[in-house]
Image (cartoon, rainbow, N blue to C red; front, side):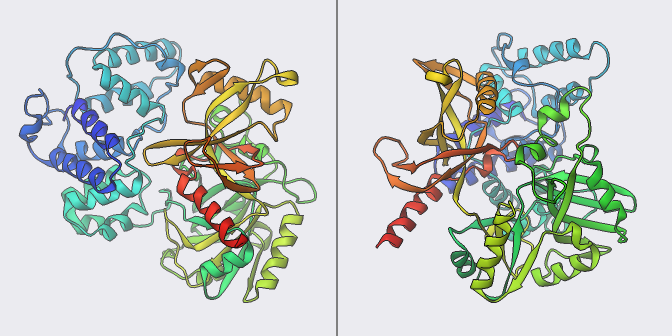
Length: 534
């Protein structure tokens, strides 16, 4: 299948806001990729019979690319390497399999002279692509594909193309970080192949995510039934896999960073259990055990730190585990929270577990919240004791509470500062997710330190797309955590709402754009404020 065919469908997916239409378009393309010969819709394009690359491989690649990712975790090519591209080809010629093979070769370049060879290979690859293909592949390589085919839509499309229950596809996806292998198994192996996806030490499981509530009482009401209250640590989410002395540490984006966290690896090796998968947080603490600023922990896993020459492994970072997914040969995903916590307590010493309270009292839960916040932690997560580990999903089994309202938003633009901020990019334009794109809901420069102003000036100039007067517009890539006092209706911004007293807490390099809060979620705060005031 030609890359041009995939790019054409991606454009169609982008053009519709209908979730069902997106699903149908993707399902049809997966079916086409799985067939021995492409349908007549693409017959006029040379190479559409999938001559380069097997049907199974092409299905894997189609699902991977339409999910907005590459097979290669790193290609060694960044924004600067793609800033200037050769003249595009007049006609499409490369299949998705050929593009993947060339990217794989580029990712393996190393040693003296590799930078020059990489530039040459990138120029050769992009020179063989048409203009739409160039635009798509550049977006794919920089994590900037915006056709709205989020994970849930892709999984539904796989189920439809394979004629299988969506539940079976979603279950398999829990055990596979990339979506491509799930699509391959579903379309070529059916239900039996999907059943083969299971927990394996060394292969990361998609992390369970928490919903949110404005206060402890609301969280308890949301989970319902008996509950535990876990400390919400202000660190980096980690998933630790141990098999004997072999230890892997994965981030929430499923990058392996064990070499950067030797102290976490040492703690895992000290545990008696042989096969383990643990969920937790890595946190930098001071001599008294209080958390250090988030940026100190985040720097241990950031792309810039990992790729910097001579970067030293992080020191002073400790793991704090709050869940156990595998113990020996026992998969604990389907086990109730209470059972997983019992197994965790029997496996991991208390000093390496997040502080927790099991109670039926809202008052006790509130007192626990007040205590951990006073100790410098981020808040709490209220967890239903009979809930399974819902990998990759955000539901009511876990509900987080922070001492202030916060949102994860994306920066859409930045204004040049005035006064003492002159010469720096200051006032940031905030965006929430809205379907396929983002919608602006306010600006702020509050909470910014001089150090932050200097950092963001360099950062946003590297993301610049164009300028209008004093505003630098940027690619929607940088996630920022914003605290605010409330939400009010506004005709000034396209989202119809604005944040009251918005201020910057921190930039979140650990969070992907798929976790940016939605405009619907922001509007829910408005509805909640209205009901509480009434």
